[in-house]
Length: 204
Image (cartoon, rainbow, N blue to C red; front, top):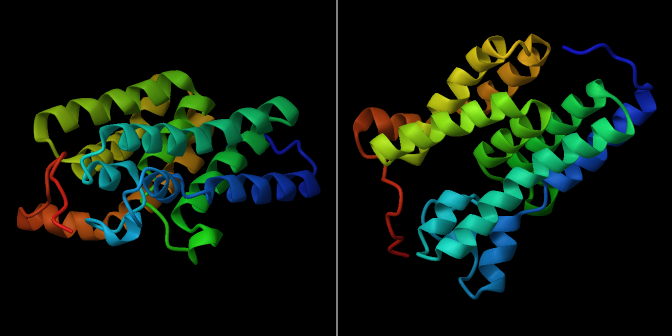
């Protein structure tokens, strides 16, 4: 982890603001704005881009993906510019927690994959690009978004060492564990062979 150089009060403020940013449910807002209804009643009920894609609206899904990734990335970049690396890592974690447990949706949020990748890209872009490439390759081969996310998260710690960014290990391990916890149901479906593939349209 990085050296702690930012005053505790500023770290606490950073965590709060980043959490509130991460809590913005872009998937819910976008689907409502384009007349698709409440995303939480569609498909899996998840607020992320994969579930938005189940509506058949690729533009809405792409916008959700980019904005959810930006939540983590923007939080990191602002904290780094204004404070230091300890604040940047805390901001990434807090935005990620905001996406998973958003105050605006009674703490029922998404699974954090896009925010995870956006955070990595902002903290160390080579690591982020490697994680995104891992997701893309696994998704292309399997056509299963959750499997791609789980593999990308699992390999992210390896990318840290390959790119000499070991100071991010604690943060990335925490994020990876949270990704796996949020994908518990997906893991069960993957084991049973019933996990839906990318692009499967919702019947609801």
